[in-house]
Amino acid sequence: GAGVSQTPSNKVTEKGKYVELRCDPISGHTALYWYRQSLGQGPEFLIYFQGTGAADDSGLPNDRFFAVRPEGSVSTLKIQRTERGDSAVYLCASSLYPRMEQYFGPGTRLTVT
Amino acid sequence: GQQLNQSPQSMFIQEGEDVSMNCTSSSIFNTWLWYKQDPGEGPVLLIALYKAGELTSNGRLTAQFGITRKDSFLNISASIPSDVGIYFCAGLGDSGAGSYQLTFGKGTKLSVIP
Image 1 (cartoon, chains in turn green, purple):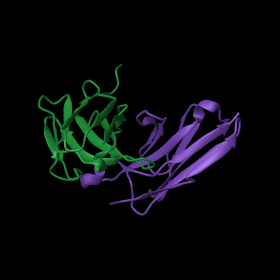
Image 2: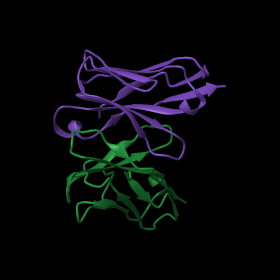
Image 3: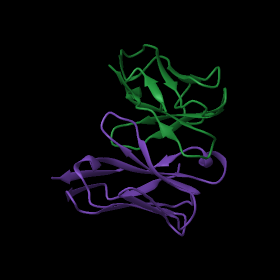
Image 4: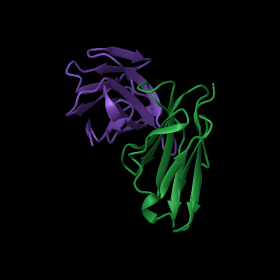
């Protein structure tokens, strides 16, 4: 079946601009996660959704970052007033239930110039 | 937060050789996951381990959940060129945020010499 999909695959934006990154999880998966991966590092947790609500957003770096999942399926990660330090690969993952293995999408490479 | 120590950081092997890598933690995990990541792609799940002492295979890959629940090992037998990539271990704890936030190691970069 279809895996996790993410769009766009690459995004280049200027410092100070607003960006939206989209994630479409595996059909039927109730849990959705966003991670951020910097060069040479493993992914780091940003936010976790169970259904429509953000169950844990403790990994979001600051209030410029926000994510939604209004219908319990597709999620959008929103970054306001982007900074060069936001440049990274943003990964989305989903799992059938919490505490189960997570399946990742291909990621969105964000570059802030 | 928690840290996973993954070793070796990188390795160069001849095609056909066996590979071993491991991951250790200062904390106990209930689930160990091994992923492979190719350049420009997301991590792909290789093996999931749920019980201390568990030994699980997926083709030429074999992984073990350490008895202490603080370590895990991944072995690749008879390596081939397409095994090239970065291998990550990741753990899930038994309660709280650790039960759904994956904690990742820094990865082992595998290069295969034909």
